[in-house]
Image (cartoon, rainbow, N blue to C red; front, side):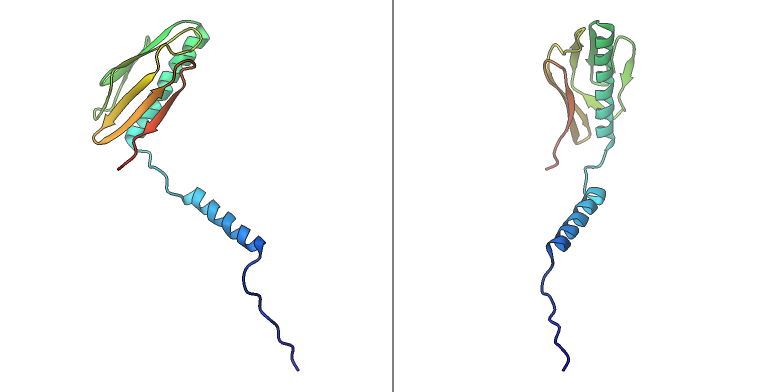
Length: 135
């Protein structure tokens, strides 16, 4: 008489963990991310230019200023023109010889209905780009 083999119902813990790992890898690789729009790339590039001036202030041990205007930013050495469709709020950022910012604040940049904020904190002058959430 043939023996009856009973099938297992369910999965082992190892199989469940393997499936969870595979799903998390797929989400990381192909997950939904905010697209880098031209305004987001512009804001990140502007932040990089501002941070370069901060590093110059520290390396030369001298005060550096970055004037953010509606259509361009200006340092001691150069003028950074914005794309024609981008405008930013006015603010002057001043870094002392230690690279600290004199006054924190937020610079708002717009391109059509899109908006990003460049936020600067007092003290170390850390800057970051905050993307406006879509509603």
